[in-house]
Image (cartoon, rainbow, N blue to C red; front, side):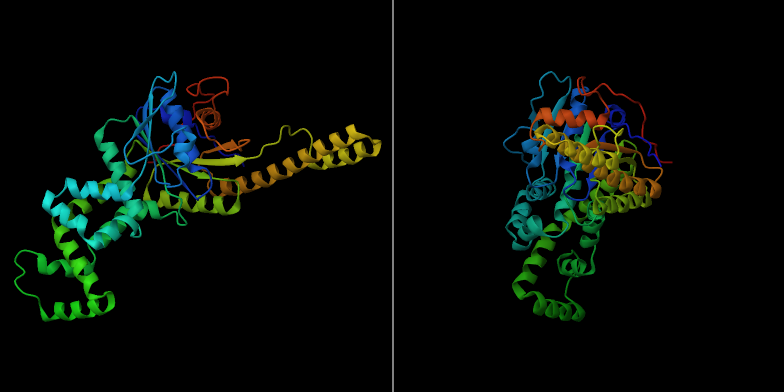
Length: 391
């Protein structure tokens, strides 16, 4: 069953497209895909920022930069009519900026000095994904960018990125947080016997100092809780609105395609806009005219003639046979995905000869992603097939 081709060129050059989220399992090339799409959009005339949540610094390397930080940094793309900027999320700095923006200087310093906040802002489970959503909301609200491309963090669970805003909201609304906040609220004149008992139990479990740190943190953060909830809801809705598209990235391996399938199902269940699937690092043969079986047979026949040249030819035929076998295996896996998700558009990208570490390598990958000819600008598409919009 043939999958419908995905036209990423039409997607990234459409003025209505404002956010593209690249997601999928770890190690499938999300960062390189994100950077290549951003480069293609800049060369098509758009003002683009690519935000990576992956701390491995691959984005900076592929863009020829020594480092990236929490602020957009312009990438020099000679001859591009648009602009390309890149940044890497610093979750603690993002959290600090939120605190500073939504509280007085004295209250902000109280929060910064609190040991519990220092742990929460740097290593608490889910903080990285939530701060990525915060940063995305800030970038979109600035209206400085025609297009924002998000490289999601490598994750064992495809749900982490989508769940982050709601998980943070649930944490802030949790029973323990509300109980810890209760004595600090205006009008709460005395602690009830039930609360004192609760405090003694929690103090034994967590330790008295940690409980005091958490209580002080919650009291200092009290006025900001409403803002956290509102932004969490707004960011989640931003991902569902027209103008946002998700691109799932996978490699032609069972585990990666299984997680891609799971992600596609989740996006569908949440009503999120899916552009399609990129199957990255495929191995198409140079020609399909010679089957693997015939190539193996020809290699045996050539070897019978003897000589160094025969050995070389036989080796080339066997490499072709191996490539045909690998391509057939990858096609089988892709067909299984397509059978399960016939509505999902697909774009396949051949494996590069080596690591992509500069703009030329990204440009080559962008040509494969967008369907442009390798010797033409990435703004020149071969096809104009748009992903189907959700109802």
